[in-house]
Image (cartoon, rainbow, N blue to C red; front, side, top):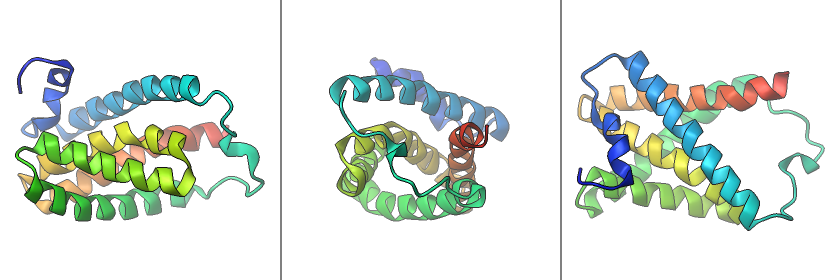
Length: 160
């Protein structure tokens, strides 16, 4: 990959090292990018309603840490199977995949939610594509684990 800000994500393509280190770095990338994105969303949508305004209660932990990552990874696999065929590089495929998820989340929950999910889904897409070079099973496993790790952050906040 050439110069530019994405050069800092080159580690995302290196699957020949420890899976734990890979997941820790990818988790760090999701969190760091999400902090920036959340800040921008707060600036762009200062009067957006809070996600906690509805009285549905807290989501079940099993749903956050198991069901959501599995279902989301399977959806990601489907989207990437299309974007990978239509784009010249994995980076482009990951970008189009993230845009697809951004659009869906924006339709379901508003533009601010779509924007908030853009960065994590870019990282999830890169993870899937990188590990798919080893095997689709590795791609599904590593992407699901990454999403579960990311979801553990709000799950811990909810439970505190």
